[in-house]
Each structure stands twice: as structure tokens, then as C-alpha cells.
Image (tube, rainbow, N blue to C red; front, side):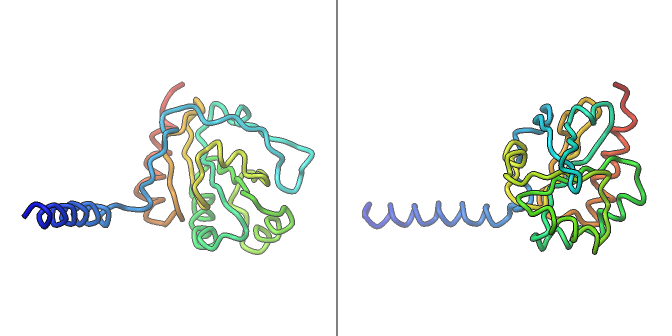
Length: 177
């Protein structure tokens, strides 16, 4: 009797775990960096490789780090939303061009429009690794103290912009250092 009951119970347990897994949102990948200082970087500016920008240069302001690449289909999907963000908000939008060729990234922005205040080159992907990037696109909201307050995995939608990003950006901009 036990030799038939044990496999049945294991099957039921496995079915329960699979059913629970189907209810999870694959975009909700937790980040251990939330509420921690953003990893330091000093990277060349896209199109001006002799000039660098570091996260220290962004202290005292709320900024977004959007990880993108010219080869990324989802990045093309979210691009109009980022252009909309750039038009409706004064928030600093930093692009992190991830594992891409500079000429391809420059051409991509030239053809589709450039929403970024500045875009940085992460050709080797080391900064992306420091930020725990799983894939592109990903977007981080960083407060005036340089602390990561939110991570969005996947393409940012107009709904995300309205319901998540703008309220959080407005809240963080209102905070006093």
C-alpha cells in the first residue's frame, strides 16, 4: 500500500508547486539591490568615448538607469514610452548600452529618437552584472542619495509609466536630502 501511496503523494506535491508557479509574474524578479547604494561605475559616453560619466556625477538628483541594446526587440517596443517619459518629465534618464557596438547603438538612436539625457557604453557587460541585469531591457529608479529604489524587468509600458514610474519619481523628487 505504501509503495503506491508515496508516488501519489509526491505527484500531488509536485502538481501543487507547478500550479503555484504558474501564478507568478516572470517580470517580478526580486533584486537584492533595492534600498542599497547603486553600484559604482565610470563609463564612456556613447559617441564620445574619451569622456566618462560616473554615478557620483548623478548624486543629488533622481535618475533612471535604462539598460538597452540595439539588438534587443523588447527595447524597440519600450522606446516610444521612453521618448514619452523624456517629453513629460525632467528626470535624468541614463541609458546603459549593454553588450552592443557603438556604431549600432548610435544608428539606432538616430533612427528612433534619443530619449536619454546621456547614454553610456557597457560593451563588456560588467556594469550590467554589477546591477544584477538578467537581460535587456531593465530599468532602475535611483534616488538623490544614489540608492536603488525600484527595478523593472522587461519593457516599460505606458501603464507602467503612469502607475509606477511617475508616482515614484514625483515622490523621490519631493524628498529632501
